[in-house]
Amino acid sequence: MAEVHVIGQLSGGSEFPDHRLFCKWGIHAGGAWKLLAGNKEGQTQVDNPQNEEFAAWCHPIDLHYATKGLQGWPRLHVQVWHQDGFGRNELYAYGFAHIPSSPGLHSIECTTWKPNGTLKEELMQYFVGGCLQLKNPDLIYSGADRYKLHTTAMGKVHVQLSIILRNFDKFGIES
Image (cartoon, rainbow, N blue to C red; front, side, top):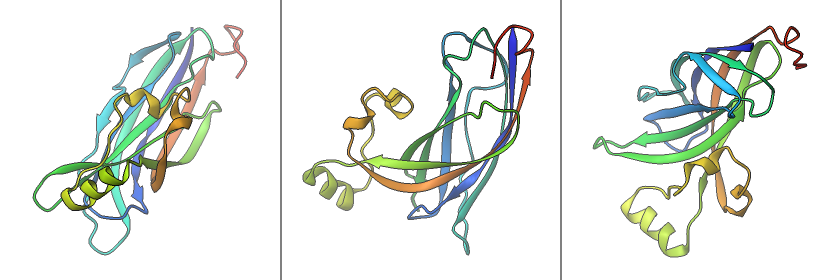
């Protein structure tokens, strides 16, 4: 089987409206993909930068996949959360990015967004806090019904990944 190694890190987040951020992440791959080693999801620590606009996470990603074809190439999906002064966590944004299909070092800026609600929901969010959440988190990375969502742009998640491809030519897979 052809193999893909994904090695890197979630470097951090920028351009979000507030500090004290952390990120929940996951990798989604199609049915022809088998995870041989590594964790396909995780969570960073909370970072509260005092004098800068970049929340540094430096959270490692190390995955090893085997595949029979290119269909269902892995995608990274993220949820950025904010922790307030009382330790309460609220969802800030969703985002996803395709894992690069070419070998080498890649810098990725994963743009994020949050869903908009009705006027009543927006007022409740303003006065009570919290954020609207998706009922089906698969909408983050599947394009089927995502076009129906009304969203607001949020910040960016910065990702550094090294991609190593092995045996693609041996098994007749052209990348």
